[in-house]
Length: 134
Image: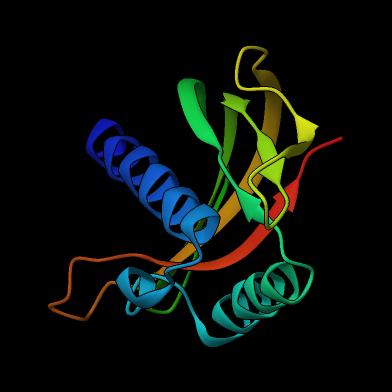
């Protein structure tokens, strides 16, 4: 069911972004594969080292469309193109804004690829790749 899949993909997009922005990656276990998790953890660690925090807000998801889908044996791989408005602010350790603005949302375009073993009883899809669309 494409509509249900896209609803779930949008919910995952929001949940994963918010966890990453907060720097709390525990909720992502089981939702992202190891190399995505490692990349997120590296970015969060670097942010902490630099004394920075993100105060981002996902304002709206304007569009979520399937841009590619394959099925190889029982493994389904689906890439979704998200167009979203994000208010992004980076703060230093004193809480001062060093980049961005909460009052001025930026349009972003992301390509996220999800994988699921269709023979598994687990209904969840796992995020296996993220990319920004130019």
